[in-house]
Image 1 (cartoon, one colour):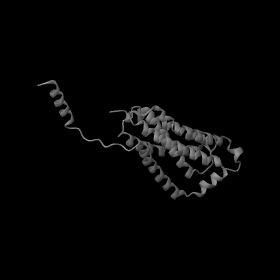
Image 2: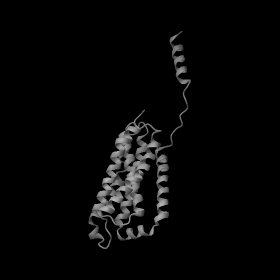
Image 3: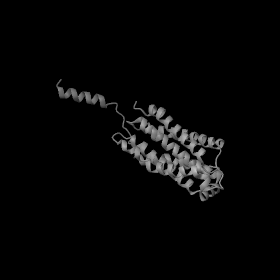
Image 4: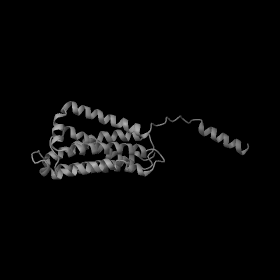
Length: 217
């Protein structure tokens, strides 16, 4: 048997049981699908709590609204970055996509440390109330992170830990934005500290566990 025929036979044998692979939608479309789930949760919270209290807080302290917008933009950018990093050949620079939203989120939230000077008539959070925020962000981040991991396991992230960190940032940002709907008080230093701890926990947990789940099999 000649060498070319042997190669053709090997190629035929290898390709006999190949199954067609369905092409994944572009990253922005998959991120939009995940954000639709976030929007459904927001709609449920708005139906339960209404918008009056949230609007009242935002009129008294507009920085709270900007912080919520920053958290939402961070979630959008981080989710898009996670799906982009799941495409082989995409550059690591996609991880910088959530940076503008994160800067707005951090900057606007930082004004909460001056809450008693900016809006002295507002009710600031006690340590017990702030711990409820931590539980809210972590609690909502768990299913949102799980959904992102399930969606990304069909891809092939070559940087699983970085991708998982983006998943954690997206989930924490979305949870913090959802928290604005039912936040019963204005942010103060204790509340912002709990927010930072919650976001750090979510990102670290995703990087530790999500990286293993997303690693190429």
